[in-house]
Length: 101
Image 1 (cartoon, rainbow, N blue to C red):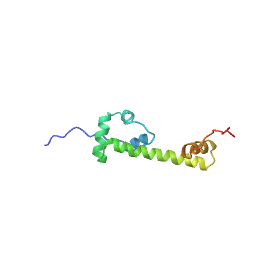
Image 2 (cartoon, helix red, strand yellow; image 1 turned 45 degrees about the vertical axis):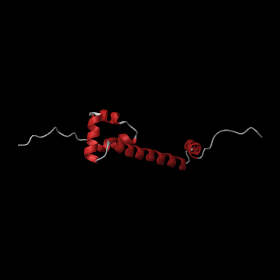
Image 3 (spheres, rainbow, N blue to C red; image 1 turned 135 degrees about the vertical axis):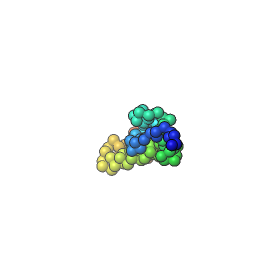
């Protein structure tokens, strides 16, 4: 009978995805799952055929897009604070008053 290697660690990829979307680090995710970061990296290569850095960049971008969508929706719904924030950050608007006249 052939000798088997060590048991492969099962990763909860849905949990990993959710934690990445809220910008958790790989170390934080590994800690939450009770595994080492190296194990997480190896499992990503095994299960997704890409490096964890690439996987995490994709999922973090999803989280940022989701946050941007929620901010935009809040502004569309009339949230004055969000309207001001987006105006300043996307339209280069400011609170400065020109007193030179």
